[in-house]
Length: 114
Image (cartoon, rainbow, N blue to C red):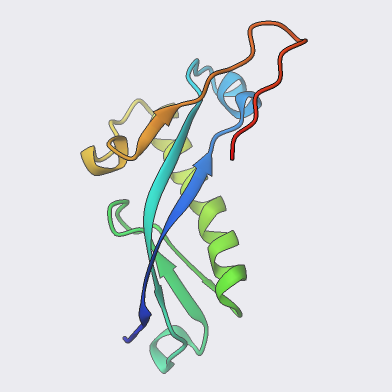
């Protein structure tokens, strides 16, 4: 499988506060995860394929690079939530990509993440 121009980007995976509270978790984090994108080939049924090498088996396929990254972001979010909900430790490399988001203390505050 050929890497599309040696593409490696950071994927921002933000777990929303409601996801955390619904799952009984109390920390909101954002993860900047490395992504490797592969060009369409016979092996990928002529679809783009992207994966997060530090998150085992976290992959997604799509018709365009943008669609593939959108799917991958959803898959990565569910992967991380599943680890947390089931009490499993995330791989060390994933934890090293995480940072806590500051949640507003009162409703009059606004948090902007760029």
